[in-house]
Length: 490
Image: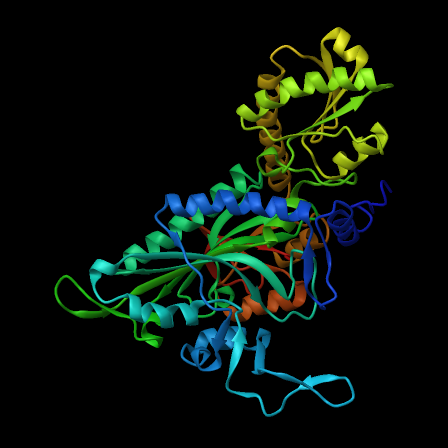
């Protein structure tokens, strides 16, 4: 035990909850299944948002906003879609409350909606109904729209960030003149997500396609990025869907082609959510708290003064006031914690818990020696460094820390990705080593379902550019042409 955090080796689930709560990321709401994202947690989400939003704009997308409420009839227009979300929908049936005469507010039964409204579980239906009025000609294509929003999916079992009834996300919805353009868009956005996961979150991911039974409801193909957490379970970190013409036909979205023909458009949708916060925690953190990759850390460098009197503090503050603008000019976020209400040891523990990548301690003797004491959060090393060119040194060290965190996660994944050639070996690996298991599958939904029911492992993806090799299914012994990735997952 440390700082009240359960060891991840003793109880991984409790360890995760302890970090979320004690690092001030989020807390449970009074509304069952919902969460309050606290300022420190939201500042990380804002950094995630900012990077992704710029990536979307760099690839030609614009932001818009669509209604939270969707008429129930819209969901009846695309059969597979409604089937996929029917059990998770929150439904608004009335629009007014009234006083019952005893001081209680009750639903006014006379204020029933003519048509029930669904609280947005995803926006394909309301957006495609809107696009019908936006698209007339090939000149209106491609239509590349993203929205940042909240969604509601009624969940029975919830976990902060990973699975909550309401969560935050972005959802892209695009329309194209050809299937080739739509597939290209689907793959492009998957690459955007993979680049973000690896180069900002420092989480290595595998790009692949979902099996037909795991596809998004209403999609022809679902592409995904899959990440491995430190307990050996997989986490789907992002999805990009090729929707074909299903929604265009359901909502009669047509365009006049260059040849003058009326054709239905081709569609994609893609999204990531606050689930990325869960991935960030579970991929890197330890028993002392968060370990944040510098690129997403709200505070990259914290400076703690060690002083005995006002003169010491003034001298240290003068040094910090000179260093801070230099760091900021290099794009480094810095905090100077000169609170006199807390001792240095308390501050050290606090910033370690919050995952601040670099901590500097500066005392009177350090000023005399023109040095500072530096602590790295990723390795927990402490050492003394010169004040000379300290700003450049720290900026370079942040890059090194970012790379080290990624390499550590990549090594863990490599050590926990194993081939299985029999069902017994497969089950033994699942219960022992855990992680990704690469195995042959006969391609049938029946086999996929049986493996899931017996082992709780699912096919996470069929990796893109997968190596083709002759083999036999681990369960049925039927011929197979490639291995797929199995894992237990969140």
